Image (cartoon, rainbow, N blue to C red):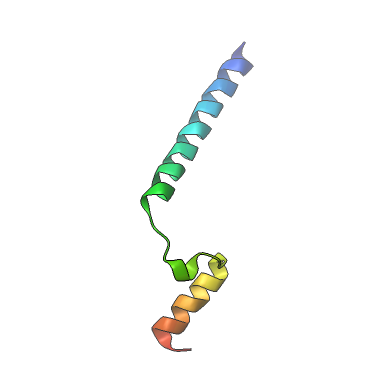
Length: 53
């Protein structure tokens, strides 16, 4: 009984976290030049544009 209650609380918390992430993800736009890049490639590209390296 206690285990089911704890599992339910954990599931509810995880769902809230997912909802927050999805809300944030839906509110931002990714520039078209970054669409097919990995996060590392994006950081490298921004550094190149910013510092000219």
